[in-house]
Image (cartoon, rainbow over all chains, first blue to last red; front, side, top):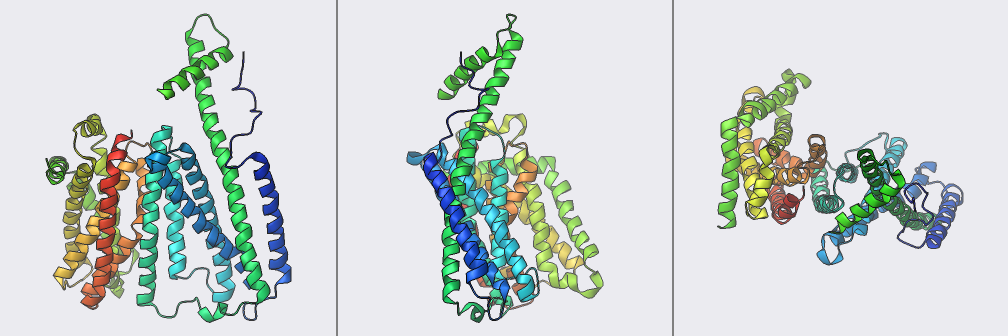
Length: 276
Length: 224
């Protein structure tokens, strides 16, 4: 008799890549982040105007890039889920995992931008088009994540999530366009001075691009981990349901069968039911 | 039956329910009026801030009332298995969307009219360029109603519906809020030509979300 619901699974959950690849990716990511830290804090010179504050550039720009990449992947995965020929629950999980990363890194971008803005512009926040767009983006996908947390049937939820992701994605260019328009129509000379960043030192440019690369690796690695977690989560929900059904059956039957045996029966019944 | 007559059928049903239950009239409308009053408490009425900010305050009040109108439009489908009946009616999903959206839009337009009078009276606003105002209000209302209906059905039947819909809806409506406020500002104080780009943006927004609603409403209605 098997009692797989009590045992820790011996096989790792399926990820986007095989386990060794994921592990290697993790080490490469950490190494490239270490290189980024070395270059960002050591090898690059302080900025002529901004001083050491410019070092935030090496984190701020890559994390903003990561946020956009993540939301792009969410939209693509959602579209692939909605397309009948490519419909697969894996795309829903990828969309969710990517959106979570996107929200986290959008938040980080905002916080780092704010920390950077204080010494350079003298304010924590400016009503600049890019800042406002990023803030709206943050809330747009925060809502999407809240929707994803709602319990329900797997297929129904996945379809709803995918449609919500597409609705949000379509709004992004409209928000960007309208906000840019708003700030340029009413306010001349925003705080972003193009001359400020016009000349960038060779090692600074390298570090910036290295940061983008390292963060992209970080994204792929975290996406895989989060995806595995989503698979485990779904498995856990199923196992808990099996256990609950088994306990219910055991409570009803006078013979008092061991719970473990009925769990398997319940699991079989559930699988049969969902196959129909 | 064409999609339009089916949509009229659904809109007629919703508006008839509102005409009989008077929830929009006795709850949503007073809510919007109170919001206008609250703004006067928050911003000193003597300094002319209210007059200057009137277009924005008006649209914030409309936006908040929209949340209630959307919640109401979908709570009537929850009772007595109305949503199942709607699903079984054989009506086209797109037509149901247009119908529900139309009913919400009619309610919002009525609300805007009353709140507009309120703004004129309380905030000392002189109405100018009625045509521009009307056009902007129509385009903005179409966008509000379309996105509201879309998110309304998306969250229909969920236990967290009341708290989820505002979180989903408000960020999406940021461009509508901007466009409606700027075009009203331009019509009331500035130059008419400043209003046109914003009205075009509002129109574009409405067209995009009406199209998405017509496409997505059927599949969403099928979900429990």
